[in-house]
Length: 498
Image 1 (cartoon, rainbow, N blue to C red):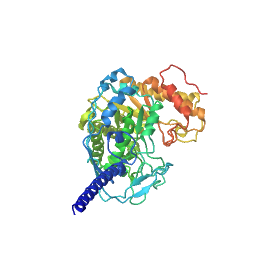
Image 2 (image 1 turned 135 degrees about the vertical axis):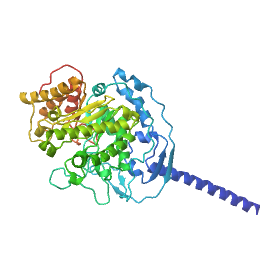
Image 3 (image 1 turned 135 degrees about the horizontal axis):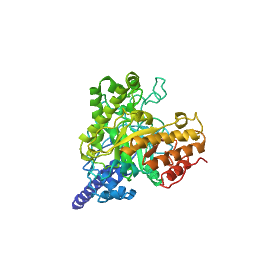
Image 4 (image 1 turned 180 degrees about the vertical axis):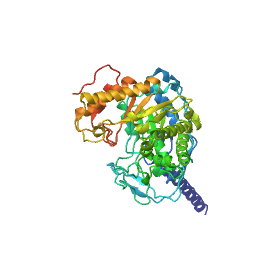
């Protein structure tokens, strides 16, 4: 009898031990399925970060991305004024709680991905979590005691993550119809226009190639309600992509991109609503930027906010030119005031101010005014697509005649005379060369960048996926990269067409 009781007790103990092991294994499996939330997994590419929130509920006491960046950013800088960043804060400890739940999912591959891995997309829910329902902010990083001009000059050559976080359901060809759209019940994601999801490896490769500054255009209109309350999952994804570059010591610019587009019937709102009822517009614009600013308020001065993208007011301009300029000046001033009021590092953050349509000629008009800023940390944003038929499409195949070169020298010279020489730094946030003649494109890119580098103007090449292969991370035309390196080397030489 005693032996039977003893055997029963032993069997019971073994059973309890096995059950405990299974429970531990289940928790571990759930953590791995969610993508994890450790400092390592956050600083590396977790491409399904937003979607994984459907699988697990994660609560963190702190994010270590900012602390990680502090030590890395000093390595990327050659400016002696950056010594302030050498005293990195001790990384915060992080506690993670994982709750395993069961969720029904639909699986969908990125539109242009050729990898075997898949990303999961959860069905549209009836309620939207607002971006204001943040995870805790990272530890505040130090802002360096440098001017905006010094910051711009610290940028080597920049690159745009185009047609990615800026994609939206839009009328891109002006025929009154949406070009790309999601199926009913699905949410817009960054693959809508054909590019795969951005990865940390992409930015690692760019940095190895000499790029130390990236512009990440972001469109918010498909990810917020009518009052500008941003969907938390979208804000999380934006932050994750920002961190891919920021954590590696790269400068990062984010903005409100196609929210200022010309298709208000399909979601663009800045141009239309600011003219219709400015106070109502301002409440929405303020709400959007306040959420962005709060999410990133503790990031260092390696993160820059840009007020808007290519905004102008044709109807108003044709009626009264001064009214059109007054409106864009007012939005830019309110932008500065909104960001500064959020406090933290935003009180001294360097801000990128959109020119009128970001067009050089129109921005050099005396009616255009830079906003007042007590912090004196504003930078002008313009784009360079001249001539349009060569830069944006292959209608004009070649470039490089004496008159064309003179035109470029004149326009960039105006930026120097009207702004740089007056203490207002300039960034050319977009440019491109799309002609079919390779030597013309190389000459255009090198000439533009050499001029700008000599004048202390930073440039960001536009890339919709045609410059850097988003799967292999290789430059499709390596000659462009070599031209950029030569132009920004600081060497004194004359650019000639070969």
